[in-house]
Image 1 (cartoon, each protein chain N blue to C red):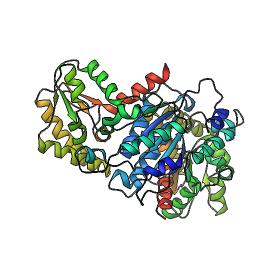
Image 2: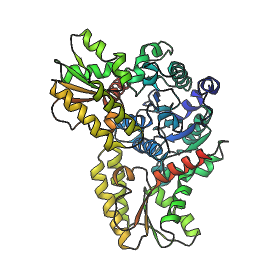
Image 3: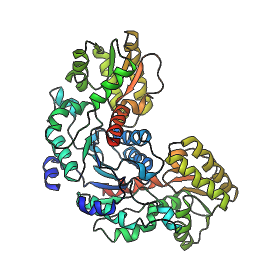
Image 4: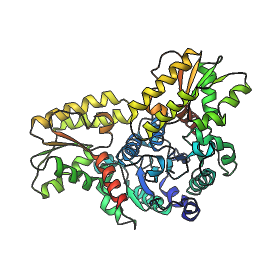
Amino acid sequence: METALDAVRRSPGDGPVLGVLGGMGPLATADFLRKLVERTPARRDQDHIPALTFSANFVPDRTAFLLGSGPDPFPALVASARYLRDCGAAMLAMPCNTAHYWHARLAGEVDIPFVSMVQATLKAIGEVAPTGPVGLLATTGTVSSGIYAQPLADVGRTCLALSEELQAEVMSGIGLVKAGQIAAGAAKFAMAERDLADRGAQAIILGCTEIPVALDAAAGLGPARIDTLLCLADAVVDRSQR
Amino acid sequence: METALDAVRRSPGDGPVLGVLGGMGPLATADFLRKLVERTPARRDQDHIPALTFSANFVPDRTAFLLGSGPDPFPALVASARYLRDCGAAMLAMPCNTAHYWHARLAGEVDIPFVSMVQATLKAIGEVAPTGPVGLLATTGTVSSGIYAQPLADVGRTCLALSEELQAEVMSGIGLVKAGQIAAGAAKFAMAERDLADRGAQAIILGCTEIPVALDAAAGLGPARIDTLLCLADAVVDRSQR
């Protein structure tokens, strides 16, 4: 298939195809593609990064498994990553924080570069808020897996967790966004954000890809909002231009 | 590849994969994916339509060719459609109006259903504005190719064209949106829309996928705004549920 495609991609500027392991959730994937376009220095269609996006909506719920109550999503993630590689993708990105629990294992299953959204986010935090506690708005799966708390602890920083009640509000907000009720979700995220700000957070990780769909990363008062989708887009653009 | 994927897609509800021939332009593709998600009756990720989206940004400019000043995009379109089919897509959709000039020929080159955005849009116009003239905001390529004017004339309806000056403003607006300057583009589209409304248009086709990125189809005063991306999303959802 690559050969047939290569035949029509004659411009020397045509870069390698980015594979996007998406569908977790579906709105976040559309939002990532929009942000990737917005962050790519381009003046016409042909300047953009060619991408193959697989909306793998069938991947079992990541948080349910991490909390011990659902099937393992890893086999579906591996099959989807290999599928993108077999379709000709030369680099992978996965716009879903919770799924990054499996990122290192997944990267080991495919022989192409796999950009990490967690690494991209930690880099951005280091730039905009280099010291002090960091707040995390994310699924209960992401929080409990420690994908952000562990690397922050490794550099001596605290990742603030929410009370059980507020964490339940965040999960409810994520469910509302997935069902298209964006304003209702935003209200729940804002409540949790206020709590983290009051406790001294210098930056707030919008650590589930559904959250920046509802909360504008550029707005916000107090601690810097870190949009993990924008961090991933910037990392992909950076790698594509090397 | 389909076999490896089939092994992990075990739920009987897993439908066939939709192939999205996108990247024309890149923002419109993200917007289409968002609208597809919003129009799909779903309560969780796993209810959504699995999709493989190819951002084929390298396809030569459609309007330039139709106006006689650029390379033929047809070979790149055929290769991209076959690529999606070879990757396992069971149905195709192409969120770009100008490229629909080649829709019938393209559909003949692949042996899977290829939903037409033009047909989906004509159906919507028949429902919301069954009589009277129809306005068209689109690229000069789409306007001159007659992909909307011809089928409207076939049912005795007029497709209003813009003056050369206003058509140039629309093209300039489309370029602004492609470059990310959305508000500036919206102002140009609104100017052309007022002219079409004054001339009696009962419906306005937002006939370039960049236009609804800037103009909200649900807002607008006077004639109904017909968002061709929403029409395509509805047609895909309708077919996927049969």
